[in-house]
Length: 198
Ligand SMILES: NC(=O)CCC(=O)C(=O)O
Image (tube, rainbow, N blue to C red; front, side):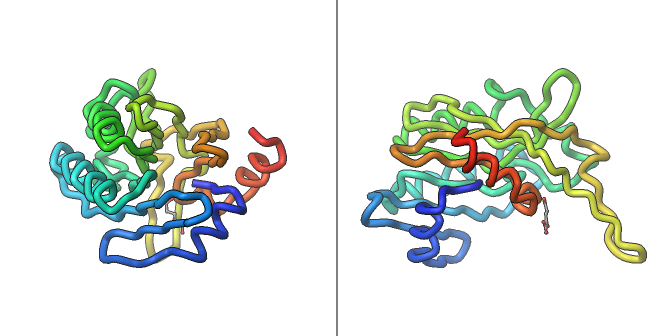
């Protein structure tokens, strides 16, 4: 997620670390953010239920915005992305996040999940408003391909198609740009969002 400079300053000033649960709050902008890290299992429904529980916990801690991690409903494994993929909206995870946003009256940045569309699989982030509406979607643009001779070889591009759009959403007065993991290393995305006020 690419945040505006103002939001970043607030976050840097006020991030508090909990185990598996980080919250940032800002008295001047008047909202709290939960940054959630989750343990993922092979059971997709269990992963989704765990995320929903953590979102409820974020609400109980006074958060208006909660952010889930990349690939929170599926093992991070190129051989499995297709099996765990679903349509957006309408799939199991979309339905659960929409419901969680509505029942907790909060904004949810749904980390990412494998999305299937026209036979292609994407690594996709969804954003839900407090009425449970899907207000933004971002497909990871920069797929993480790494090949260290004698070391790690992992290629998201073996299984995933890349997105090709910049995406933002509005939270009160703040416009927030979206990026997934490796996307953040390519700062022209954030710069373009800032310069063009997308
Ligand atoms: N899932 C990813 O995009 C990993 C990116 C990463 O590890 C990095 O260092 O960048």
